[in-house]
Length: 620
Image 1: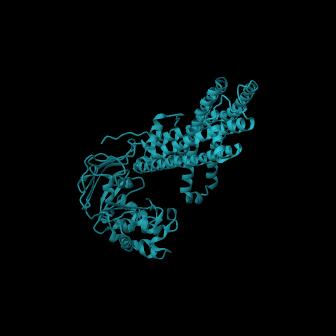
Image 2: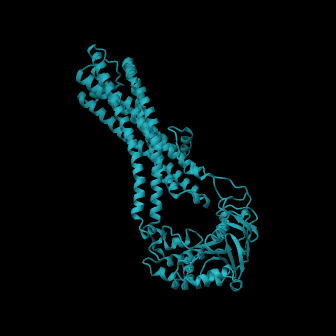
Image 3: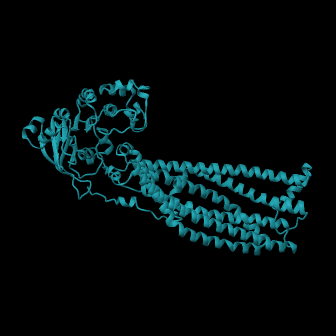
């Protein structure tokens, strides 16, 4: 089997990103596509709201100022029919001009408010649903990455992609939706301004390239800063996850102050980058505000002369000042949005890098279907394996475990015991013709089929959020409550479970810390027994259990192993003695093989380990 090489350093590499990656945006649109109706409705609503915003400015300047206050109706600035509408309302409802104008403005404001709010709701609804789907797809994809991937990539990096980077996309998409709403009145206002005064409009438009240049230099200045901010946040998450997950070790070794100092250094680095980005943003914002003030001054200076020469009405000048805000606001917001856009582009690259990471366990094109019940024969045939080619772990390991037989694997730490178990569970790829299940090459079987026939009890039993019942059944619809209780009774876990406040419905806190280590191990046995696998693997399953608890589970273990092929990795004398055969590994090689009495008689490595055990020296 050819092994595809993956450079895991690329997964942790600092991504430069780009301000506008059209290919990346196109991929994001794929998740928005199912919610396109909401986006279309949102676009229509923002169009209506934007038109209302423009008309409201016309009502204030042309109707209120020119028609009512000044008494002038002729002007180059169009009134969009609002003066005529005001006169019609005066006649139809017998209203004073000021009240008719107020009624029009009130109706426009109501429509503007309702459509604007509905636009935001529809936009956010589409974005939130799309990113929910993206987050689920990313989670599902990362669940299928093999153990070799998580051996090399820190979990904190994955967490950043699923949490912070998705949130960055949300901010970008929401900002872009709002920005589109700002550009509708921009073009309407620009059209009206050109119609009223081409000269003044062109003078104001000269400021737009200045804003564009400022934005260009701002982007160049902040490009590296925002990348450093994202990477420092990822480092913070990784450090926090490592410390919180190992809090007991931290407190036992009195590393609180040391870890706090390390976290403080990373946090200070993040703060330094954040301050740098804030300072750049502040300078950029102040510059844009200055341009807006300059534009207002130009309108007042130019418009005053036009009013004096009676070429422009007072309301027209006021409308120009109001429209200037509509002209510059989208440009300013676009510059501000570049901050979010750049962060999101880098986050998008991280997300799609993870989604595109194709490292996975080899699955056969034409898998062999396993029978309903396996006999349970396991064979390791000249197994050679290493997690890296430079460091072999197993060297020519061969052993046959007959159906229903119990094999114990012993040896010093690092001899390859757990590696054999991981290979049998198809957590790593290996060459064909090395491991067989009922004489079927494991490479001809789907990994999910292999794992459904193997029950593994590890020394560190993983607790999921949920109840006792949830942690035994693991969501398997074939495992009923009755079957769960029966399994718990068999391994003697039922006794302590029914003494809990809610019995099998007792919720377990994080990592099951409201149970003792022995109780968690009993749940592990119940979990495996409820699944009823043909092959049982005990990987140091009783190493952390006290003598009294071990006596409780011995009877359960006998029932659990009855009729099943069992592989035991253990150092406890009683467990090893009961095995039909014992495999002794040393530096990845088979040193001895036989039963307990035969190996003791050889006075080799097993004999040495056996004698050391009586001295309470735990070599495992």
